[in-house]
Image (cartoon, rainbow over all chains, first blue to last red; front, side, top):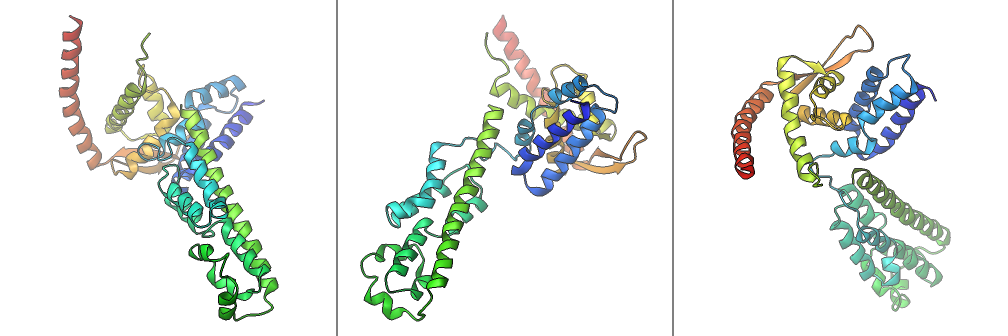
Length: 213
Length: 114
């Protein structure tokens, strides 16, 4: 491996680790680290020169953590953070409404997430997969079109029993089976994507924590 | 052996380091690599060179230093850091506080070892 390859590999690792920083700060930091290595590893340097320079610079994770304000907001990822992700996705399916609400409470009281993660986790979609379960139930019954107007989590509890006559009377659109299926797919994909988004966030935070010790 | 460089010591070092950087920039504007090289000449000053860059970024956001680009003879332009009036005031306040504090710590440590 040439000195330049060692540097490029480090910069690649650094950029991935820096993904947790706000955009402007990330760019500035990556520029500075790049400039530093250009000075520390001049053309003609050997591979071991480059490795020494990188050793002294420190791990990407240690540098990125130093760039977070104050004590790292996601200092420790705990089991409950993973439980929050799981419940936001599936809680409403296991115990309608309540399971999901517990997940949301855990999510908002967690220190492993920032506000944008919490908002996405709560709203995309509200109820998590249970929104899809509710919709699917509605579609299989006669109340095809109206379900779209009442996907809110509060409606899930009422769904199993009185879905029949009441729902039908409020129903306006017939023949929306296709629209229902598309909506169902969108909700399922959105739920899973949200859970994956939160999961990736937790994994990154865990890697940072592990790197800093 | 007791771990002297545990959490407390590294926090202390981090807290003091930023004033050492300000003190260095009081002499003349410097670019990042130059700051690190100069600090590195003093034993025990920095352990992880790279963490200096987030520190410089924070000093700038706090208005204690400002940056400008300057041509370099040996490569691309460099980002120079320069002390602001606010930075000078912060450094003066710290210097006074540190003189008192370090004297107090020295006297306690000295008294304990006797």
